[in-house]
Image (cartoon, rainbow, N blue to C red; front, top):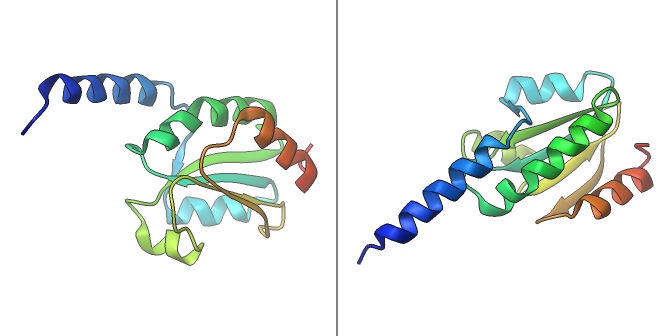
Length: 128
């Protein structure tokens, strides 16, 4: 049984949310480059059709604006680069992993994060 109205609604919501996505997505080489950049990296391991991941995009966009000079705020699509995601021990979407300027993981969170919770965790980890 199909639900055409529901499918149309999901398509419209998905399109609207992805239009808000101003946070670049990395490939494996780009991820390695970001981790070696000498800046903090805030990487969301997720997917372009994952609903919680889409809900995180406006928050990531705000973090990118706020921390843009001090941190790389980026997406990494697990569905496109499964092996690389496994190397980073990503088991669920979304997973936000924060790396310090030396590329060392300092914080990990699985699931949706409010902006206030995310910013408090970043400050506690040392990104101010």
